[in-house]
Image 1 (cartoon, rainbow, N blue to C red):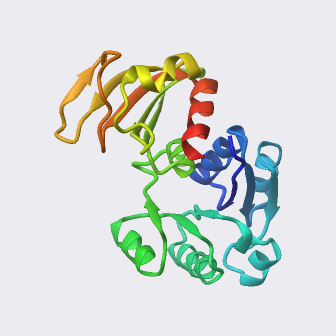
Image 2: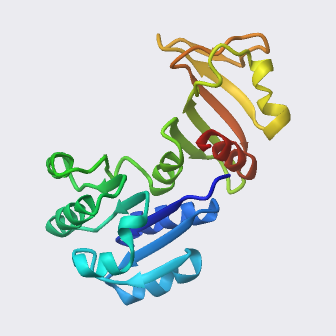
Length: 221
């Protein structure tokens, strides 16, 4: 898996979940919050945790935020601080900015000032967002148990036109394809080895978390 770098601003329940999940998946994570207590709580679960004001441009510049390909702004209830942090990060030229919104109106404002993706905590759990950040093809990630999960993703360009047998996912990664959902919402449950993968097909696979992590890394390359 290619190593990626993420900065997470705001370490409430949502931000902490994203930061820890990304770090557990083997990526470098800089976690930032103005609360010393929250920073200390996550210090051993990320690459680096720093107490800083996410709305202070000088602090963010000093931390090298402009060098991170992806920044997640997960500031709590302070909508003004969320907007300010988004503006600062946008002006720094960060390639991909993901921001937590409190409501649809807040989300619209964030979109207008340059956020690339808006997430709503009530709908998007932190670990799901974390997995999606690694590959835009990933639509959903559902934990079945501490060890096993279900991954739902859009077929990559390299998969289109191949059969299930050609993909060889089970032999290579140890995960199983449960179903294929087509563009017309038809669901092929327990697909056969000779079934073809078409453009925009959505595959649903199940497997051990370690195997899924390896598979996600392959998709993200």
